[in-house]
Amino acid sequence: MKKYTVLEGAQAIYREGNEVGILISHGFTGTTQSIKPLADAFSNEGYTVACPRLQGHGTAPEDMEKSTYEDWMDSIDEAYDWLTKRCKKIFAAGLSMGGTLALYAALKHKDISGTILINPAIDIPDMENTAENSDERFIDAIGSDIKKPGVYELAYDKTPVAAISQLNRLMGKIHDTLGEIHCPMLIFVSEEDHVVPPDNSEMIFDTVLSEHKELIHLENSYHVATLDGDQDIIIERSLEFIVAYSNAK
Image (cartoon, rainbow, N blue to C red):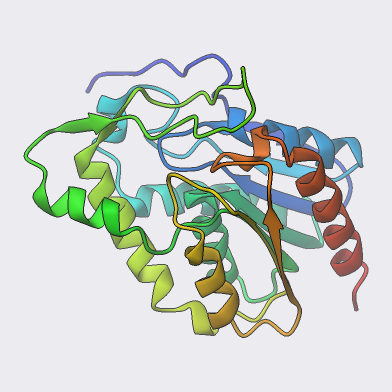
């Protein structure tokens, strides 16, 4: 089996801090580079942070082609287990498919303190059509959908069609169980997103049974909002959310 080298900047991020832990997941074909600003901000406030490199990501598209959605969930589980050994309260956050995986964490761990979702993916018709109709092994890249000039996402330069099928299966699995989620939730949605339709966030907000939930619209970002013009808003409001619900009884 070929061994792939991890790209510089794509390494997992684990930082020990206090007894409040935050699991942050990057998105489909992306890397931890896209969520490092959140990891830095949270760890600077003293929180314990775990940002796994999802299996098949941060190496080569050919590596991702062999990974499954169960592999990506395993990556989340490993990071969550690491946090449980160090923390009394845990939040899950994620960008794009990372938001989908944060919802998975909330479904699996009913005692989770809250979730923070940034342009989460739950239903992308274009992806479904591609997986069903493409005869290609790879299609064009989907990364770096960023409004701010001169900013780029470290992501694959092509997308494995086999992985798109796995993404669709993951989204379907989570979509069907949204009504089982009750934890506090903060959702950020870009008003213009060329990867995930903004109505995904609306659908999640309307379907989860969380008593405490908020939807925040972002006007100065495209899909990779964590690297875009609303980064400061995401960090500020996320920190407020974490303080509020880590102190909740």
